[in-house]
Image 1: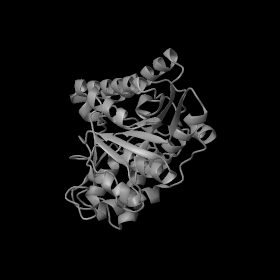
Image 2 (image 1 turned 60 degrees about the horizontal axis):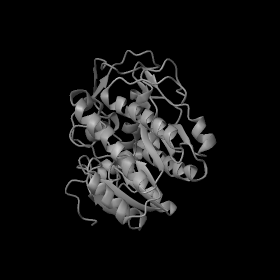
Image 3 (image 1 turned 30 degrees about the horizontal axis):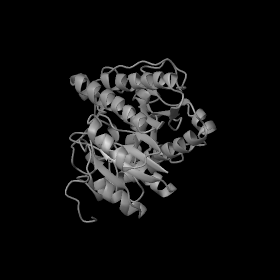
Image 4 (image 1 turned 90 degrees about the horizontal axis):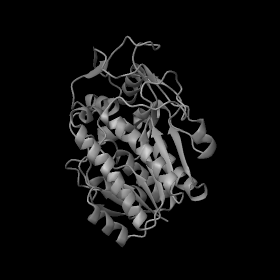
Amino acid sequence: MTILVTGGAGYIGSHTCVELLNTGYDVVVVDNLCNSKEEVLHRVKKITGKELKFYKVDLVNKAELTEVFRKEKIDAVIHFAGLKAVGESVSKPLEYYYNNITGTLILCEVMMEFGVYNIVFSSSATVYGNPATVPIREDFPLSATNPYGRTKLMLEEIFRDLYQSDRRWNIVMLRYFNPIGAHKTGLIGEDPKGIPNNIAPYITQVAVGKLDILGVFGDDYDTPDGSGVRDYIHVVDLSIGHVKAIEHIQHNPGIVVYNLGTGKGYSVFDLIKAFSKACRKDIPYVIKPRRVGDIAACYAEPSLARKELHWSAQRDLDEMCEDAWRWQSNYPNGYQNDKEIL
């Protein structure tokens, strides 16, 4: 069975390619490399000892994407490709709407042309907006506070409309919480472009000396220690969730949505403490004002995925931090200029 992974050279995409290959699937990757590097795919091959096919293609280029489907016999798609920085989406909304929504529409058009109706969609917990209570269930009201989140919300609605129009479609929408960590080998991990937008790579870059100090946005929330509480999930656990979704879609037609999270809330200070333990050094930080749009607490109720996908997160916060540090300390500059294993 051949899986097309869009955005497969990205952080979550590359780890998912590893799990797919190790499970026995054939993998075809399309990625425009706007926020990733081809080097990661060589490392995926090194980790798994297996080959995959790669096409440098932008989803908004329908002719090039069509050519990929013409050359490869695709059975299902895992759709990661998209711009994902919340702050950047506020300053560049048209770019986000065009890239994320138009790219997905073209992908679905091409899939239909070639009779491919199975897709796992990378959604996000951002679609819950500011939830009234935690833990968050899949049936909670949906909203979004920024253009990035709205693209995910809109695409979920598009997929629902698509399914209503044509019941041949089988769609799994996965809402993830906060992926961190790296592969146990330390060969692949999170390599953000420029200054990290997410806290985990920011902490690791402070620990390795690339950045001076971590900013903690708010220590006066209504949480146990005053800092924001989030559901951090190991990227390998998250990737295994996608493999389970592919297995599920083969035997359970329809459209479904699942939270992928641990169901546990960790504070920013919990995260700093765990990273300090992993790298055996203090992480310097400074308290800054709350950011507009940030909420006090956000964590999943993951029991539906446990029941229907037979999936649950296995790795704890210490392991997430140890693996993230192994990757960052092995490759302080990420994939840049690291060609020794090719």
